[in-house]
Image 1 (cartoon, rainbow, N blue to C red):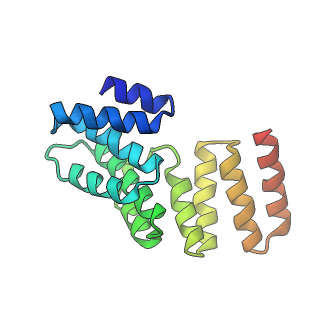
Image 2: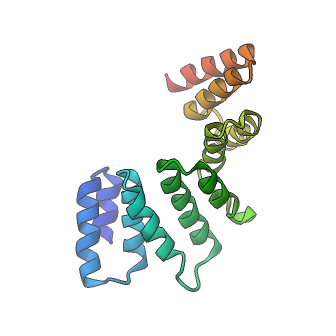
Length: 168
């Protein structure tokens, strides 16, 4: 698991996947290795593989709420990558209220709402995301785009300028 995690952190996704598969040959039930493998599948856009593995991991007994939240969050990302926006949104909403401290939780909810053309609700989620991550260029750019769709040109311009400054 250590090698796979190190490779993952270094952005060596294919090597991390190979290390996970090797480790699983020796320890097929290792939860941590399977969790790393699922994250690597998401990072490499292998959404179906990720979803299958994550759904399997969610059936494990005795998982703590934080682990369940992380697994559901990653499952929602795999659904999003396959264009299943409604299902991804429902999966995110099923995460326990107290476990929603996952980085970018509100950003992902906002992005899904935007894809579903629910711009008012998306704007609210992006605002919540910005409260947790002030000055984040991705969130500011999403706020700019959403404000534009809501025909709020001055607000869109302000967010766009802040996004450019934050990225800069």
